[in-house]
Image (cartoon, rainbow, N blue to C red; front, top):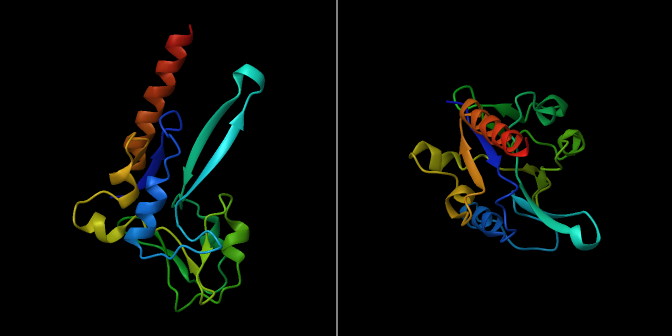
Length: 167
């Protein structure tokens, strides 16, 4: 089964629980550089009385056409056949940052050893039938994980509901 993340930006409250859960699940240290494989960004929209803050929780999108995979000169980045999760083999990574330059989401992080690190969708949790840590802790249920086809259908339904409400 193929896996992907979905963020309902209308539900995200910017609580950072997802980033903390990611750091805890993956034993990542808090440091000067962002180390969480899931980052939460604040986006300001509008001005004056219509000003609004929105939050975007972002981790590896496990893109179908993964630019990081294509940019890696050593083959350290590969896609798992069954789950379609994009993984990094630290033993093959030379820390050239080509993946980081290619990623349109700015997702790759580099550890103290200089090798790329990133979200693996909590593969160990998935193997045991559990949700990724970030999805599990999201109090507003803004984050979901599942099949891209099912998530895409949900997105289409939400968009159709908005169109219907606006007419």
